[in-house]
Image (cartoon, rainbow, N blue to C red; front, side, top):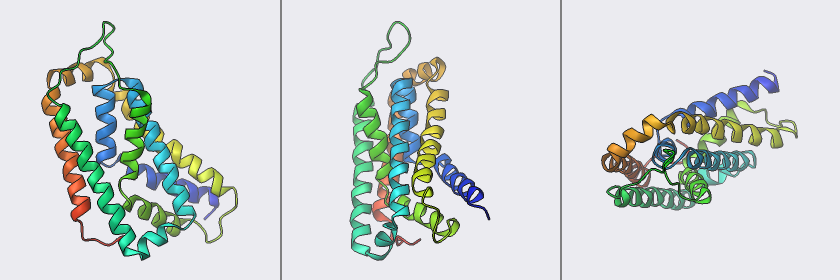
Length: 212
């Protein structure tokens, strides 16, 4: 298999993972619908940087450390789950608070920096993602890939992760989804908070090893 075909296979695997439901998707949806299009895009950029980080970690072989040092993986798993639970608490707490749209229909957005950080921290909250990236790379990349792969592959993964979540942000930040969100903000936010909290609890309580 040529190296270009290998890269395509890796990028497709990463894209399918990004498209699967999870806390990352929930956070981008909430930023896009509940805040603004720019907030959603900033959150998507944070997701992309998180994917870039995990790809660099995988290329450096550091995922092997997580797979072999059980206590380190356990500590990161608990920290990641605790962050998701904290994020869910914040969303639940703010759910009853009303949000007023401006005259042009755009909801007041939190700072783009905060939206970016929310996306990045959510993406980095699950250490198993590093194992997934490492497993994909180990299965598809040759043992000694060309040097340019170490630069090009992380950049392409950033584009895949940020690109997919940007599409989500653009699709769900239009006026109709925003109006529907405003009508049922309390219950939509609490539903999102419950889903994120459940994922956080599942991450903390999971007894599966890092290699699974």
